Length: 121
Image (cartoon, rainbow, N blue to C red):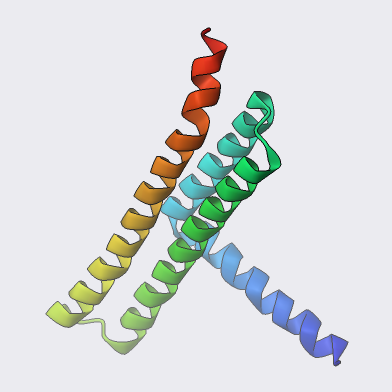
């Protein structure tokens, strides 16, 4: 195993995440919401299984947002002119994020609602 190459690979990955955080406000919002979800999970005493499901949902949303950013940048690399195909590709990538985020919200409601209702009993 070449540790120098491995370290460089991690550097490239962190550089990409840093770029996305500095250029994509939606990714920042996802990270803020993820932080709040984790804090609420701890406060409500969620089970390890529930926290794992929420963790996977968070991971999926952030991953899809990073994928969306990379798709948008790749399209910008190919063409700067306004082309319908580029718009469609970017819109579909954004739709992927929307669907994933909406699904994660539903998962969050299903997990949090019983715990929140228990607080009012």
